[in-house]
Image (cartoon, rainbow, N blue to C red):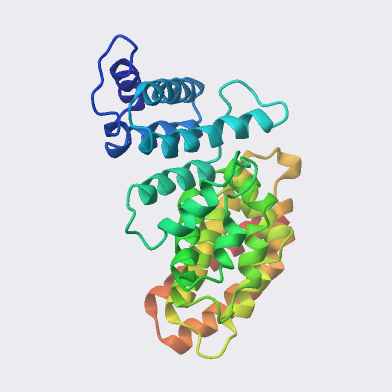
Length: 318
């Protein structure tokens, strides 16, 4: 639904002159989650409408007679309010990272389901905080390295949050501040993470390199391409891992090409030359692996990337 319609509609429903009987419908219907999600919009007007709706949710909850139920949702909103208040130089209607809003929306879903295996963990960590750090990935390290019996479920949940919340440069800068990619790369091959978790790590890296900041940072400063070579050289590497690596390489190359196109003429080709050697080594190793696996689709994708790299390298040298 278009937020330009939904947010004013929700605001009108919660106007002071409107009578509201069932206040919990604001949460059950997804209105609260929708307003929270709007805080990560790139449009200032959408964020302003989202903050306005959340303010009216607080007002509606304050007048409700649900003494116990409403405290949970008021606390969720106070986390956002206090988090904004504790930040330095916070602009009006500040944009929150999608990592934060996706986390909060998923938390609301869990708190609506007391039978969820994550209910105890999430409620214990969220409801004990007076404010949320809006400049870090919420609860990432604690859930990833959980010692609970349901640690696998907690790992998968927080990795899903990071994967779904990684959308642009703002989200990657938040993840970089929390050392998300460094931690995930260091966890590769660990017995503490299962096959699904390893695939989620590759999915997160794929989302990261789709952003300009994430691609340049991971490729030029964090040795992503060399790290991928180490994965491919492992004995009995999973075929699905290889496909994910090829996707990461493909998206990285497309992002780098788009960055180069926007540069001035005298600066074009510098990033390509910087990663050219590592990219060729990785593509060569992928070609060997694809031949061994006898996968025609993999070979075709790798050849397309190689031909594009050779074409740009040739044009740059001329």
